[in-house]
Length: 169
Image (cartoon, rainbow, N blue to C red; front, top):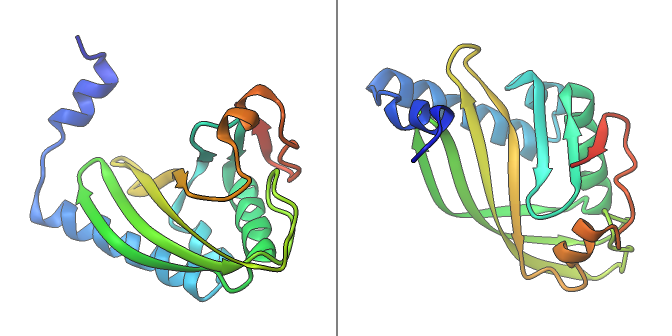
């Protein structure tokens, strides 16, 4: 049987107004990310947001953590591009699927910089906070990154995330 938190998610009502509000916030978040506008991006998040690479021990907490996550990501992959391939928007939040291309110019998590072009797929879930009308962070699923082993990251075989506001999960 589903627990109360899951039942609450399933019972959220879909209205044209809530759909539009969530969609517009996601667009604002995505545009800020594309423009490398970290204050604008962070303004779409709850103060207690969590950024997590699913299947690993890497997580960043709060606005400081989210800023650290994006600073590391955009430093490691300064030309990163997310080509959206699918999106679902509902009262629980947004789920997007993308094909990602970038040049790996700096270390990222347990992947040393190679200077080479990389391509991979990801799925990102943006959970919606209906009371604060903001996203509670991102849960990122990654597929097809050469040299990245989520099992190694879970077992401690990877380097720790080294930004203020980050923790192991």
